[in-house]
Image (cartoon, rainbow, N blue to C red; front, side, top):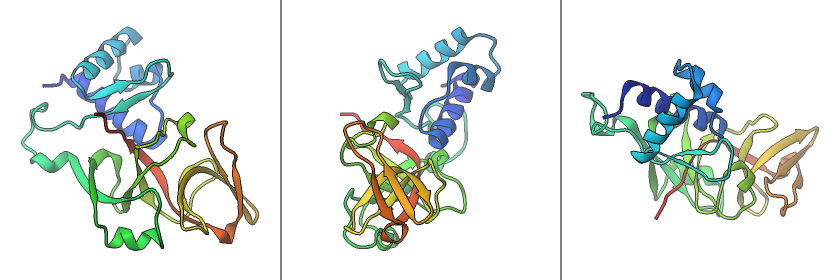
Length: 212
């Protein structure tokens, strides 16, 4: 069973990472759970990692991943087993045709933590193919959790449908009638389209990474 502070930190990490992609700083974590020292946060993180709830990526700052969801085994709660997870449609990394149709009539689903989503919004999972976003911590084989929307603010990571019917995940920047799809890997070049040549399908809400 998790202690109260372990649970508080895990909930904070889950919500923060889902909203910001990167993990919070030690200072932010310390303030969030009302601890006086960063050493206390280090102890909580170590305990969560040992229990298999999170994973720290070596040699990377602010890189914590949520790899396990909390369930009744770890909490003193009377909630049902499925209270902490939901299923969303899972799409391939390359979509032939309009992916919105696949969302409405999906063939495959993936379970995700319920704190990755918000009420009154639709979500779908997108299998990541390639390494163009690795500097954002998004790797080949990851599953991106996408909030369905056709509007995205500049600087947001969005799933975009191109004229080639390819779904690509990039940081976007819209200026007048142009949209720039910006990778997060120096080995890749950004692409520029007329705004009517692409369709925004959603914005990045979280990531799932599976380990063998």
